[in-house]
Length: 271
Ligand SMILES: [Zn+2]
Image (cartoon, rainbow, N blue to C red):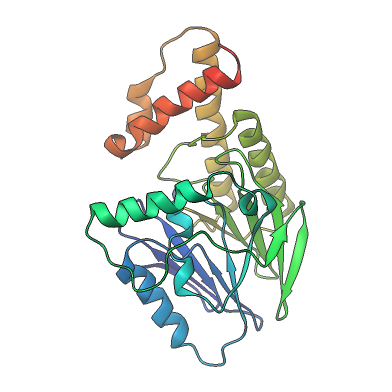
């Protein structure tokens, strides 16, 4: 379904995990971000794109390499792809493709396009690297922490920030890679939000956000979760789980990520 639409931006929301796919069509640019999930949903995005008139060269951006975000790649073979250096050098490529195949096999899904790990044309090595697409400017920041190979993408002049799996209103921080890096990425987002350059923020899962106060609220919520986790683990206190599950309602789907966060925190800080 379409969750959010303006003259230049369409955000599709999957039936699964509130995962978002973005399409930007302003300023002579055509930019697709993380087209995803069920075969019919990817096909709907493909058809939506095919129906656009006056098509320009397509850029396809991957916010990170988790399999739910790369699963649609093969349906857009004409695209110039963008992702981080860590994405192209990931040791986890085969595992992400295996997870796609396992998911499809488990739910009897057939995809009418090839499934594989994306080949990347434009590699992001550093913060504020940019790319011109028509009259639009795409700027990128490295965003590790959730996983090792995330990027933030800011489309200007519109002020559209694709945050990948940060600042969701549906999920507390899922930290698969590093707590220290996760905090650093939150700081980068905070600086961007404070600069006034961000007018629309799109998380990889959950609702688009257009108010600066709401962006700041999500930043505070992410820090608050991490602060509580840190305090409980460093000081041997029980984590207030009841509060967590009143703030985040998808407990059955998310409990394991909270437990994995605890495991990773203990490893990362040698507890
Ligand atoms: Zn995700």
